[in-house]
Length: 165
Image 1 (cartoon, rainbow, N blue to C red):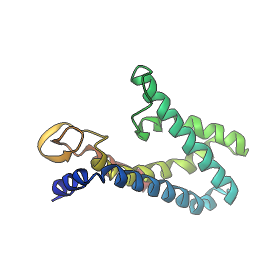
Image 2: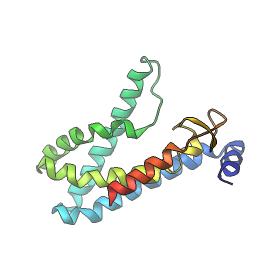
Image 3: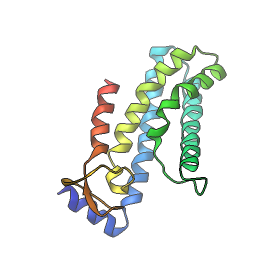
């Protein structure tokens, strides 16, 4: 059933639109989560908004740079935000300095929201075909490779849900 839906959306040309819409929704959910979660860390509303507006765009930019380096400086491509999560603490340290907050506090504050964003954003990766698992007969259909692949995106979502809670 899911494979039929993925193919249908791909054939109609909706795959990228669905993916992009859900990624935007994931960012909005991340922002709302941080606004409500801020009280636990004693941050003001503006500190929360500024933190998100520093950390997420910086992470996204760094993702593009990594993809640019990875493909031999030919194009920017590869919108996989997961590749920058390892750098998130460094970006949080910069945000903490700007906001005059302890770095550890900022890292603790932001970490669950990045996992939450991944849960939502990666749940629709099969539509875009950007994340690819190993070929397997029972897997989900991938529009890029036009084969069935192991659903690694959904496994990552499950792991991220565990991290959030």
